Length: 77
Image 1 (cartoon, rainbow, N blue to C red):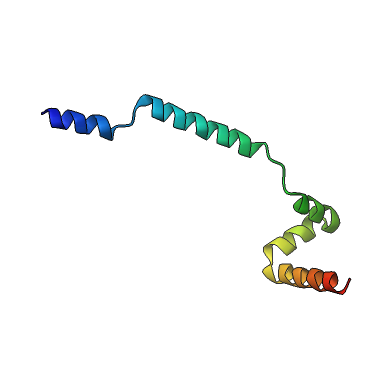
Image 2 (cartoon, rainbow, N blue to C red; image 1 turned 45 degrees about the vertical axis):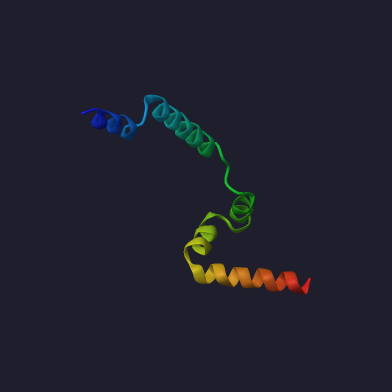
C-alpha cells in the first residue's frame, strides 16, 4: 500500500513545477510577440512592393533566380 503512494507522489509533478512551467511559457510568448520582422524582409518589401514580394516568396523559381542574380552580381563587383 505504501509503495503505491510513493509511486503516485513521484509520478505527479508538484504544483510549484507546473506553476514555473506556466510562467516561463507566458514569458516566452510575450517575448516572441514583441519581435519585429527581419530587416531583410522589410527592405525586400520596400524595394519590390507587396505584390512582387509575395510572388517571389510563394514561387521558388523566382526566389532561386533572384538569389542566383544577386550572387553573380556580388561576385562581379
